[in-house]
Image (cartoon, rainbow, N blue to C red; front, side):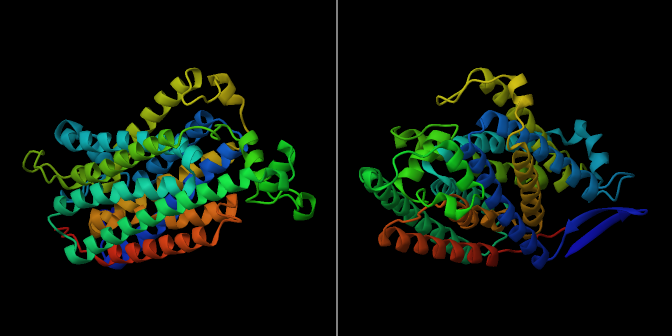
Length: 411
């Protein structure tokens, strides 16, 4: 699964086999489908998105440092084909073009993740992930296929992309159908309990006993109103165009970061001077995560004092004193950081187009949406049928993208 290119007793770990690459991609899929659910959980709990994303950014960068130092190894340089992480940090005067690609990719990911946090509130977990993933696959996977010199099997790869697009259409239909169900529920509010305290809602969402919440059932109008009263970003009555626009913008950002990382590690455009080693995955991931962290901190500190989308105003002192849900936010950053690292490690071996199979993460996110938040609870049979169809097509798309994996020559 792994190969260690060594110098002395230290070494750089490189994913070599197709099986190892698929294992990395699969673990990455689970990680990248889980962290958005944690951010959505905190927003529903009432924690300000600025506070959550600052905490998330800290551990996300910590994960990159850990991966770089543990797998990229500290010590003397290895052979020129696989120099160590520390060695490449001292060679920035030679490899700066690749470093710029990595930094640009980090900017794209950071802005995309930040936009996603707000889109989750406006259009929901499943729709946000489905839409942004579709744009990433259509643009990013196609670009990666050509950057990788057609490393992947085109017939299998683009069949997977087509299945993904079908799943996206079904996902849009799911959202439309579910929105109609929600409107019908709110129109029958008199049939539910009309007042729900924030304490009762919080108890229900975070593990309260069922028998104490008999009049607050998931999927009812009362539950939806309680959610609106509790959450940090108020969305009822606001235009869906705003949320969908944010989602499309996030997808565009996501579609760019993987090709940019690909260019940083493989130098397809020949920007490095002859004899200069290409960036190893761990060095590129460090620079990638560094710019991601800097942009996230700069934007969110600004949003503390000048919030967007009618979010409450805060301050840096307010952020430091807000410990409600901080552990979940820190965990989300770690999960996302390791998920990104595993995606790039798998992509270096199997091709970044195949590694974009992780964009089927709505499979995982939809599970968390249903399990944690009761999404689609008490919906119509039509909504359930469309939901099953979407998940089936996503599963097929994941299998096809992984089956298209080639093997990159490392010599």
